[in-house]
Image (cartoon, rainbow, N blue to C red; front, side, top):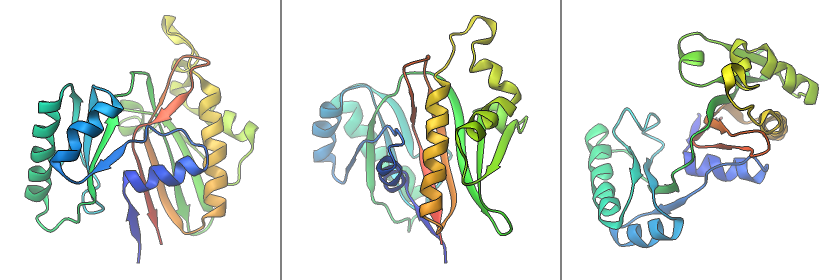
Length: 219
């Protein structure tokens, strides 16, 4: 029987492998909200953490751009209400509060476990490129640095990462390192059957990248 790790749980595991994740703090009462959000620093993002609510945005279980204490406390109540409305018996671990990330180039990095080939890594640019155009690349793990670079370059939209049309070049090496670390992670955790970091936001060259959401399914 499979089990879903929420974003909070998945991020902890990914961080153990030095995969950069936005992190955050989990709260379970409205009294904790203002103190936690202030410590993180506004603006913040707030999300319901539940293994029964995987598509948080669709369920109204994500609020972004929260800028002050009153807004944060109101968001806490609204998120719980939306979660109950979406699935009355959902198991809720709490509300995750995160720093609002700076904008960058969104990519998606994932793993699926194939019955024949084992773990297969996937890479693509986010949004329309992966959802509509299916512009993605794959490699069977384990991979090396050359494999990771080839994965990136095989994606047609990779020109965006290298500074097409006057854009600044992105930190491609941060993607390479993340792919390599993910390969290592799933080799050491064969129980993982599905993993998504979506989005993995990449900044300008030399400024790295960071995962803003993650999901892991294990068997």
